[in-house]
Image 1: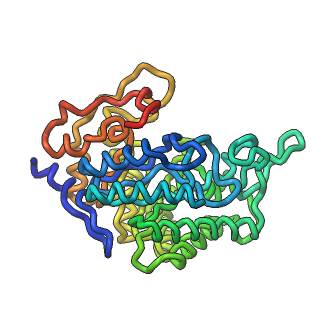
Image 2 (image 1 turned 135 degrees about the vertical axis):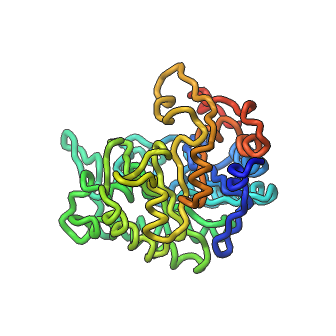
Image 3 (image 1 turned 60 degrees about the vertical axis):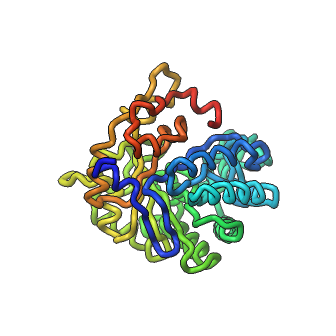
Length: 369
């Protein structure tokens, strides 16, 4: 192992969370859990990554116990005895290989469409309501709705700890429910949950506090956030380091232990005048450990390979990424598509076998390997 690569395979510790490597499996929706229950294929999918050098697995998005949390077919849930038993089997398999795992807790919000399982009659839920042709397609959340969703996240976190998960990740990114409250374009409320960014953050802050109260004080809470949205890749929640700090500090104070800073390209500076990416700025401003992510291991930005195309993402050298890690710009590195297509990605990097890493194409999304 070169000196640069060695940093990726050093242990990481935060309180009771001890990771054997700095490699994180990024959360990626796979839709291979019919009825919302992880099956044998899902168990093996995660086990293989833990066995091959991934220090921390963040599961695909798992829906919390609220009637409007789901937006897609065959995604796993994190409520109900059958689904929790499936996740317990995943936990046991990952731990047997020496890895750690956390579920990503998810509510899609207004992204949900009428007709989506499990109850086709339920519309999306969001900060602001929407009707189309006289039909309510997005239900504007009341304060009771907000309390119910917060309680669902807290219960999911409590259940995660009960079945042996090593923490939880709260999905606050990419234009889903929590992010919809953050984003002025989707939050037009005129109560205490709308208006200024501080007000628009109240939902997330209350949710994080509830998750912290439902779990032990040392149970790790990871919070994933993004500037970009699925609805607008150029969106920016904040445009200066000062504003970023003002946004993040209340979340940290509420109980976030690690920030997962989602970008499409990890190598891009977040603000003018500095080479730091979003994870670098977040670590500098909050003092909290951070996870960087964004087309790691691919020879181009990942979204160009997700549309209908014959393009194939070839493995990319990691020198620039590892140089940043060695400089402690961030603490952990999340790998998405490169790890999705090649479960042995981490050990191949560790052992200098980059020429054996499999290329990524859209075809990889059709199977679990």
